[in-house]
Image 1 (tube, one colour):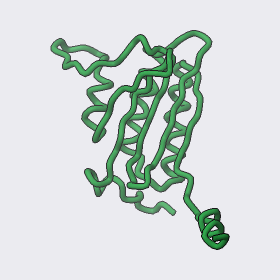
Image 2 (cartoon, rainbow, N blue to C red; image 1 turned 90 degrees about the vertical axis):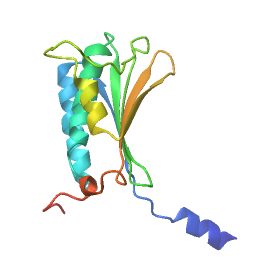
Image 3 (cartoon, rainbow, N blue to C red; image 1 turned 180 degrees about the horizontal axis):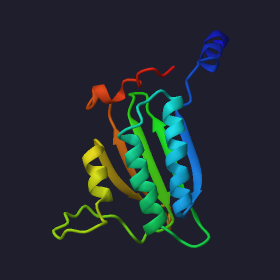
Length: 154
């Protein structure tokens, strides 16, 4: 039985999780985009469309999820199946994003429409109070060419 335990304890599972708290400011959103870009590079994943989704979700958290004195959290995870999950958690659980089509031309308000177009799945999870998490997933089965490593990456 000790041989089995030794095999289990020495199993090498690559860490494919990244999580960072960020200030709910424009600077925090910019830092989130930069950190996510570097993490995607280190995992040898393509930068886009993930970087664009991170940009929209972090900007929304800084703009709409802002609570003075509180930060928000950016998390990236690659599942066993190779799905990239992007999560942004803020402390404004009372303000939930909605899936609404805009009928009037506007300079802003298209962020979640962009996320919906780029991601294979996205949604909102509430809790624990007072938080909410907006998440998006990129599935390699749905986008085989999008998850090939970038040319020239090591």
